[in-house]
Image (cartoon, rainbow, N blue to C red; front, top):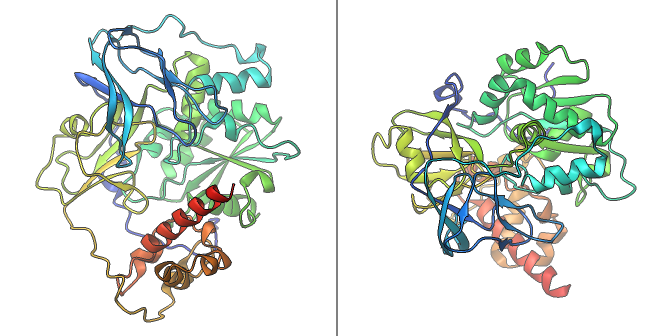
Amino acid sequence: MFKTFRGGMHVPDHKEETNKIPVREIEGAPVHIFPLQQHIGALLDVKVAVGDYVKVGQIIADSEAFLSVPVHSSVSGKVIDIKPYLHPSGSEVTSVFIENDYKYEVCEDIKPHNIDEMSKQEIVKVIRNAGIVGMGGAGFPTHVKLSPPEGKTITHLIMNAAECEPYLTSDHRRLLESTADVVFGMRICMKLFDLKKGHIGLEANKPDAAEAIRALKDSSIEVVELKTKYPQGSEKQLIKAVTGKSVPMGGLPADVGAIVINVDTAFEIAKAFKTGMPVTSRIITVAGDCIKNPCNLDVRLGTPFEFVINQAGGFSHDAKKLIMGGPMMGTAMYSLDVPTIKTTSAILALSEAASVYDSDSPCIRCGKCVKHCPMQLMPLYLSKYAQEGDIEMCEKYNIMNCIECGLCSYLCPGKRGPVQNIRMAKQKIMEKRRKQK
């Protein structure tokens, strides 16, 4: 019996395009662009100047703030510019431009670490200095996640290998091709909390990955097979499915003794200790019906989207929509010139025009959004109050607990687009709270 949570639904996953194709490492671009904003937290300070020669793995931006991690160069070459530039979020962010000399000289500071000789604090410091964040899309600094508030006892470490978003298969391929490294990274995290067992939550549509993990015969790692449905990989839903515990509204996973890490995050932790190399690249799924050769590519950070797409054969025909991440929760792109960052899990090019939402169409009270909401909210009312600007009622109906999974908009027969209204109301609430503070 596959484990799961209440709500959600199966959506066409389109994973067959890329899930059987091995990852291919690509060459770097002529110029790599590194935005100083690549994670949730403080904006970084530039640590290089125009004209400097930098090497692979060298820190080019960092901050003293706790909620931050450094950004490292993925190529060797000369810093040719530092200026505001297009970011995948849609804004302009100060970015470092490095001209690739294609020598890929590695920084002298890159050295492996002997974890057996390190304290827990030293282990966390290595993870932080390697620039590791949640690679599944959120971008939360991993060292912060692995440092729960005092008094919180961690009883469950869960790896999120669900990869429930349509098209995405980068985590699946990472599990198949780097199984031992992924498990080693997980064991490092288990060591921080003296845990004897770790859990890997894996959707039922990845039996080959489950077999690869079990083939390691590591009794400390348990594969938890999950029902294939969306959003099975959402943190709170994953915790519910694996442990049976519900994270309280407004609470954190640590409140129920759980910490969740991503597959690629675990891999990067293993790499940081085995080789000393920080986050300088990641696997990106390049797919969609407008991509000539859908595939998974190992891409150096800072590579422009257009360069990545060309490595997949380019467009087979005109794309109506370009998305970074999955089609449900990803970000629509307006340019091919934006650079890949740590949270670029996928680049999708789709021919079908985006659904045209009509906020003025009547809600027919079909209840589909309520029935399938994974957070057991009432999206039809949240959307209504958000449209009316009634922030007080939005908060009363727990709007901040919405994970913006997009199922309500996906299912709405009236094409009202409730998640758009909810997202805007949440932004207003956060602005209000910031002013109050």
